[in-house]
Image: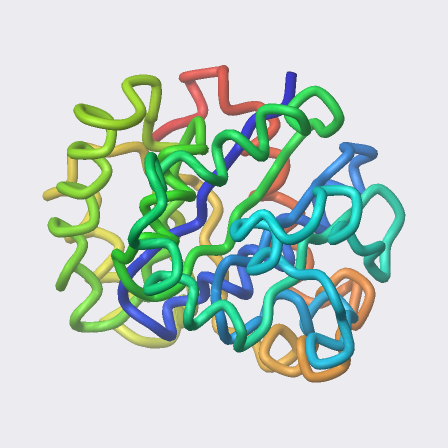
Length: 259
């Protein structure tokens, strides 16, 4: 049975989509069968995995509204072992359209119940807000992975996100756990990056990955070419970091890995 991981942070620009794209690709590279679900209306994970978000007929939007079957909206990616349920701007209206639906928080969970045995990992890229789409993702997920940018306001809003995770665990998904926190955009040349990492480790009683994703030009460039970093520049520091993160995710059950 596959593991469903929601990748979430209500702050934008923290490397959430970059992590969704590249963790998915690195898991697929390790011969894991992966499904990536883009539930961000911006559709950046969709385009970052080589799919033209403006040309697709069936997306997660049609799926949530019951206008298509799962098989109709799964797209092949630029890589073997990696499928995508894409998104585009149409999804921005979903919250209003879903408001009157009974048990609307469980729509994605019910859809994924028939897919969980098909994949080793299902990764959900959440929008940068704590809205109904994010609630759906966390209700469907086994765990939540939180990317945190190594910058001054890194902890701002994090307590709210963790509170939301705890609320969903209490009310909607009692099995939900923290997958872990991963630091992104780390610049070893700055004291600030080092201070942020140390501050979070000292003040946060949550699992933190050993892998730290560096600030890397090649990582930033790759999505514009519709490629994960391991295809765009396989030997870059960003590619190696996400390969290490994939190994940690696969080995998550070994508690000795956590700092």
